[in-house]
Amino acid sequence: MGVKFNSLGRIIYAFCLVVSFVSTVIVGFDVSQPEYYDKLFLIPFIFGIVSCFSKSIYGNIPNNVGVTFIILLEFYRSVLIPIFMAYGNYESLLKLNIGENIDAAIALMLYEIVIVFLFIRIALQRKLFCHRVVLKHSKRYFKWILFGLCCFDFVVWILIPEVREDYRSMFSMFSDEFTLVMYDNADNAIGSLKRILITLFSITFGVVRILLPAYCMILIARKLRNYPKLGILLSLSFIFMQLFFVTSTIAYTLICCLLLLIFLAYLWKRYARCLMVGSVLGVVIFITFFFVGRFLGGYTSTDSNSLVGFWTSVQIAYFAGIDNIAAFFNVSEQGKWIALLMDCVHCIPFNSTLFGLSHLESSQSIYNIGNASMGQIPPSTGLGFYYFGGLLAPIFSACLAYLGTRMGMKATIEKQPLIYLAYVYCALFAAMGISMYNFFIAMSWIISVFIPLYYMGRLYYDKTL
Image (cartoon, rainbow, N blue to C red; front, side, top):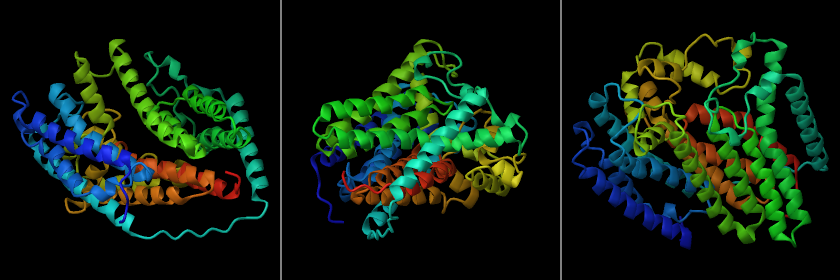
């Protein structure tokens, strides 16, 4: 692939290899682990082995955002979480029939690790072909469309109070109601004007909350190019406004902040390294503070009495841990093709109005029914195994690894700021679709936000940055 190793990529490569070895030793020699976890050490071990033969892939860190986050999230899930499990008494939210299913789940996860690295390599070896037609005077259209979207969202926010109920401030994170769904649009009749307006708001606001601050950051970068510290501070104020619009999907707000912080590094390339490293560390510290604070305050949904045990169970749930994959073996085969249909349908905006299939169950519904759980997200590898069998189990993760890598490659050479922003958004969600969410959740965000961002970015042609 001909990629030169930069200093940060070299450090991350060495760090991943060393910690993979440490994790293998800690988990492999843990005398207190349940007997059915005796092969868990293979996950960090195989990750380390595959990484050892993938030095050229690590050479794309941090320039390729897609590769960077795919690797870092896989490292966290495959190497660090087993360490948390060893020190957290192997606590998790999904333990039904775990002893019977864990070996097969470990095999699936090992298979996924190999395939993800393979498809990253395949994507990096393919050439990019970038050709776009720029519309003349299109920036004027961009401004009018953005203004119209902002006006629509403002009117709906004022006239429909239920919309405001779904958002809260991050400063109320230590409260019982913070993680609850305050308002469900499904309570409104399908096809009703109110439901249509609320759905439109959720789609347009998902775009506006990224596009508007990004546009303001571009203007700041242009006007204050000779005053970088002031420009960066003003831009940060627009980024942190995201914390006043937190939904029940808390992670999405942090993803938006991270996205805009990466965009800030793109606009101020002289300070890019510090901003990128600071952004990732800042998000990690905030997440740690959030979960530790909620545990100490008693705002938890688990029965764990220890901080490490609580942290372990939360991380396995959020990062598609091995127990979540094993849980798929408890799901009934009956109705799986209907579930696949519903997973595809849920990726499309206005799916209830367009198709009228809201009464049918998706994979998330039958996954939680089969495990007597609530709100758990079925991981991509488990979905692939459930729908297509063992051989094609990593098919969704492979697609996302390829997509995330290609979007990262496109972002690396992109000169137009808002198109760069769209590529990074897609790369981030592709990476998170492997290790945090799943293929269908990632695709729903990509369809509803990435596509509008991309085409709005094509309207905004700027040669000054």
